[in-house]
Length: 484
Image 1 (cartoon, helix red, strand yellow):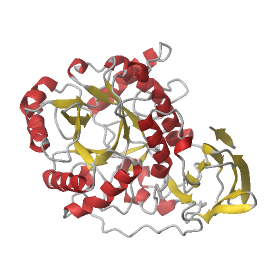
Image 2: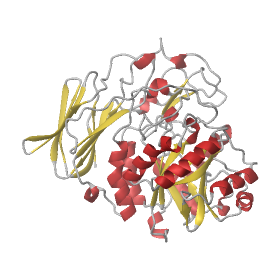
Image 3: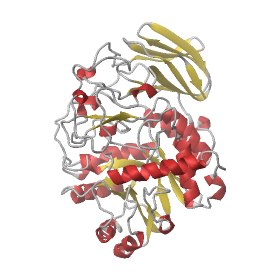
Image 4: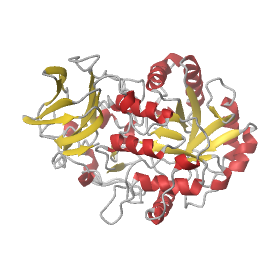
């Protein structure tokens, strides 16, 4: 998601607030919350759906999300000409597929001066059957928006709303007028919307504490995200090029959330391809905002399957996902090249571009040193088993216990093969379709992740190749370490 200057100021304010709370008493949301209902959302970019023609184009995403235990899509909307058509499709599809949806106003495109228009948009969809309601109120959120007149929004909406925007503690936003807050910052950072440094490292948990302190018992939408990499050059007006450290973030964050027990969790995101944190299928119909050069043939399969027992545990108030693992699975992800690979001669971000946003860096993405050259493997096992990984001819093996377990092993160039063995039997085996190359994918520094999974219900099943797309640019929104 493209960051605005005002958002950067808000993130900086949040960073200062979080840093001040780093050594203070921690807030346990589970100790203060009165509600028993826990919901999981996924952030959904409507801005890349302009080529959808019917409600059925939304069905597969709705069905998959519902199957995985996701309760609602947060529909991120700008002010594009096709927004209302796609919202109509989304609301109808959600109702047909037992899903809920709600509006999330993106203040890269909306202005905080548009309180009346925002309220009117809320009213437009408030009575649709698929609209999420919480505490008998129409649920509404945002991306950014510090400075919005919330009282005016409520007045213009004309219906009770449960407003949980992405305001930032310490930014001066009127937090007293909201029902809850959504925290977008899902990655460790330096307090200025970039990867952490030795002198400035703000954890995601520190962000949690900043929000919980500001909310003082009101609803918190805690974020969880698997990855972050963006690599737009001067070919677009929103040039930006950086990473946040991700590696085993997806696994570790879900562990943290089971301990935190917020009222709501929001997955960042379902389909933001431009920042590489998409968790939904690549073949979902969408337009290209310029990210296809690092997204094509880079599925993030398995991340949502890994999350499923965590989602069940979260909703049950459990501290571990282990009892919700009903079959053996192996989920893995890795980058297609090693981080020191030199792509300077051909990379599209070697050309100077407008850097008024402060987000553009030449060559490798800013923060690239924060990523390990590793394969990240999560096992979901019903009983202990031997896991073997052959990375480019180098064999790694370890015994994984029953339950959820994560491992990082050294990444080498060449084929990547995985197998799981128990009692002398091979229960899962497969070779990834993506080799790690000693070169540059499409000439680029591609720090996106490639991920897949193997499940006991489908051992030895070949992984499906990604479909071809007819791309069209949219308008507007667009070393081994064990960890248990």
